[in-house]
Length: 218
Image (cartoon, rainbow, N blue to C red; front, side):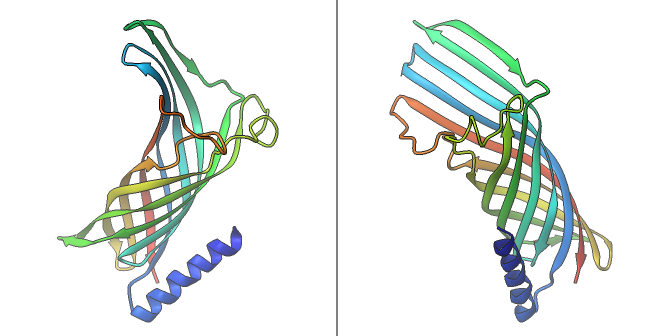
């Protein structure tokens, strides 16, 4: 993993130098929500639904080469809320909310590659962007059980389709502050490894996350 990240960084730096594209390096912090849900539907009047919503905190570093932005972030869940609903015969028979306790933790390494198109608006540069996010789960624990033991059959690493926008605001000639926000659609939402999703079952997941970052032109 370290070799891949180092090689990716070197490719961006080398490409930017060859093409004489402005490059900036920086750090970013952000927060948002991650939502995942599963619905088992026999028909419109008989189904069960379950969802998890995590509040996220993220911190990392990025390389920006004008039209390409590459970032690596350490992301953690601050809190999880689970909800369930059971409908039978067209009427709700049971529902509820479950708050995560102090023993729950989820940490991830998020690797994002974006293509973006900047355009100036006065002194500010706006840029829409789209790309791919790969989220690698470092650890997910429930009451200290650990992923290596009780959760080893789960597929917790996900690919997301990412789309968003940002605004670069110059503080000095070589220093930028950037505000950005992204909606990430989970392309691999099923959480069980080697699992064939039946027709009556629907998985769905997404993230919404916003960042503030500081970049230094090199």
